[in-house]
Image (spheres, one colour):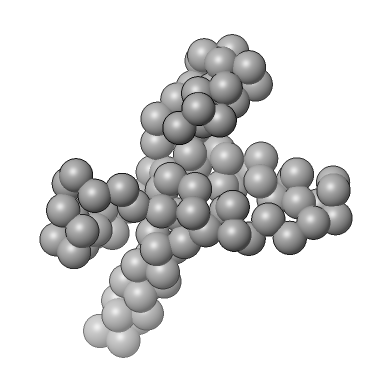
Amino acid sequence: AVIRKQIAVGVCGGAIGGARLDTLMCDAFLPLLAARQNRDLAGLWWHWWAGDLPGNVAATRREIAGAAMPFCQGAAQGLLDWSITIEGALT
């Protein structure tokens, strides 16, 4: 949580935080950092906090994990893929 706060203040000037910061980290900052350093940051990406989630994914997450349980980006993306697959199968 310390690095998250340092990024929110040091990189974003405190203008962005919470789920929006997490989305920015997972969709932009971590992939750009990985490319720049030619490193695989998949483990860090996977375990980073989940950012903004579509309503159906957020609801499923609450059902599975409960409101108090931390939820990581990798699991959120898995639920998102699953929901897209199920939705496609129903059409």
